Length: 448
Image (cartoon, rainbow, N blue to C red):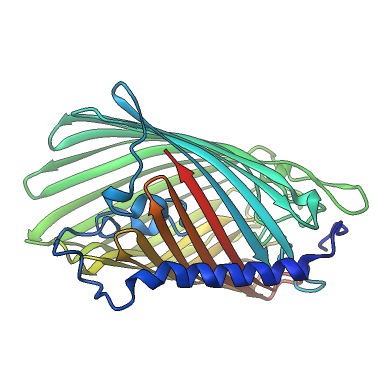
């Protein structure tokens, strides 16, 4: 049962009206300069918009990097540090959330102020690359101040170019953040569950004539802190702490220009710190997935993979049912114009859970992201997704739906404004898991 803190302020209604009015005005302000201008009219230039040149545009659903998607003339100069460029930034965001605790009943709303300082240290080597990024997010809740929190993230990625067709790459990441109130395994305590962890990946890719081979290995650590209920008794989350190890390889062979046959394989090992969980079950497991399909790379039109195959996750405890069967992954970057990218995606995957009697969550999801450069300094984004979560062994299902629309307007290289509307809902067989949540937000960013 969700335990809710008591509010300390009751003036949310007036603030809500002000925020809605401001967000609406901001959207109209951002769009106004473009009315009457054809989207393809860019002062005579035929240069493709940055939104269409990203390798993986679908990975940033929340829009953290929207400010970096405007044209080069609206990007900050940064601070030169030898062979590196330092890009500092500060963003302030105000959000109204209609259901801050993602609750089915006794729904509570609130205003949240988020202050986000961050930096990017970008290399400018003639070959090779090294980039470091740090980000802090301080949340202040207007009424429910017990949910105030500070999320931290620091990561670095590197690339070593052996030859023009052979490279090594690595990625490390460390984080500390609160678990989403609407997460399937959220403890629903007085405060959100604090989590921390680290990720490390190392890989390589090689290209020879029509053949391309890539692969990587990785390790991921997740730790969940205990959280108190309204009565003061702690919820023990130690049985969720775990290590996850993975390795995958992808090979492709160009059958004819723009189309390649693809084979992909992956293995994983998941080891929990506790020998058994709160229900006396050993949740250690190992798994694999094998897929084959088609890769497409038609310059300035569509790029991506569609693969289908078989997956299996084998749990140590014989009382836990092993999920297996059809697996598939597909994600395409379609650029119908030089200003627009459309990213459809579908995937079936296996996720861990501590829900009683369920071995895992078999998730099947589909999403669509559309990003458009309305003008060189205005980026529009729309996103929608639907996902089915089947709790293997428990006979219970959940459906999660999400929709977002967002605008970012760079007034100058040094500052920008933005606004977002969003809605998320879950329908579940599990008691107290249903919820509906709407948000409206505005943000202001300054950078050097």
